[in-house]
Length: 416
Image (cartoon, helix red, strand yellow):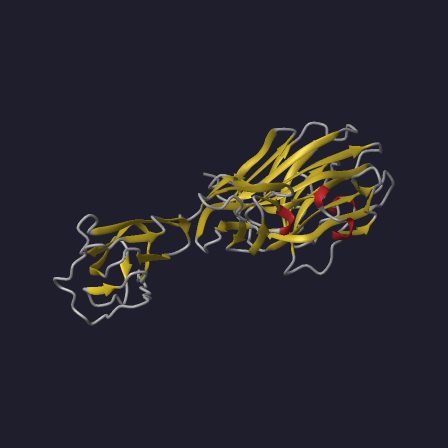
C-alpha cells in the first residue's frame, strides 16, 4: 500500500539546515491526537496537522512512520516559525505510528497512533439441501443459505446453477423440479459486501428425471380410441363394453427407455372379464401412431418399444398366452405372442386398485404388483427416447380398465 504526504506551512524553508538552532521558548501541538479510522474498504488516508504554538522557531529534525507510510516528505531538518503549520498525510491499514522529531528539550518526539481495520470478507454457507442430495421429481425444495459479515448487517445472496444459469436471489429460494434441468447441478451461493469483497459456497445435487401425473397439464396427454380423462381424476382406457381399444400416452417429456422406473395404479373389472391393459414404453423414433390392435392385442400389438401387459383373458389356441391364469409379461415391439419374461398373477379383475412398479436398469427388469415381485430377470432393452403410456382393450368380453397415480423416474442420479 502507498501513503501520501501533504505538507503546508506558514513560514519555513525546506532547504535551510537548522542544526544547532535553539528550541528555547518553542512548543508544538497536533491534531488529531490519534487516528482511528475503524473498518475501511481499503487503505486509509489521514492528515495530521502540527502547529508551532510557541514564540520561537523550532526545528523538525525527522518525520517518520511505522506500519503506515508517508510520501513526498520534505527534506529535514526544517524550520517551523511561530504559528506555522506542518500537515502530514499518511495512508495505510492496521496499527502504526507517525513520529515527528524536534529540537524541543521537553517533548523531542511527537507521536500519533494510527489505526485502521481492513474490511473483512463476508462468509456464506449453504444450509439446505446438503451436498450430494438427490431431489425427487414433481416436487419442490428450498435452497437456503446463511451469510455473515463483520461490517455489513445485510447481504444479498445470489444463486446459480452450472446447468441452468442464474436462479434468483435471497437467503431462501424455491426450487421447482418441473422448472429445472434433470441431472447433476453445481449450486453456488454468492454474496458481495459493501466493499466489493465476495464469498461463495457450492454444493452438488442431482435432480431426478421424470414427472408425476399430478404435476402435469391435461393437454400433455395424448388420448386415442376409447381412452379419456375422467373428472374423478383417473385415466379411462376402456369402458366395460365390447370391442374397445384405447391408449393414453404422456407426451410431456421423453425418458431413456433402458434406465427408468415407472410406478402407477390400475383398476380392472365391472365387466365380463377381458382383455387387459399394458404399460408401454413407446419408441418415439420409430412410432407412427399411438394405437395398437384391440382384443387380444390389448391395444399395444404392433407398437414399437416394450410393454408390460396385465392379461386377464385366456386366448386359448392362438399362442398369445402362456397360461390360463391372469399373468404379467414383458413384450418387445408389440409382439403379443412373444413373452420375454412372464409370471402368473392372482385375480386382478377384482374391481380394486392395484399398484405396479416397473424398473429397467443395467439390462435388468423388475416388476412388482402390490409390493410382490413377479418379474426379476435379465432383459436386453434397447435404449431410445420414449413416451410412457397405457393401452387397454376389450373384445367380445368386457371390463373397465383405468390407470392413475403415474410416477416416472429416469435413472440419471446415482444414489450414494
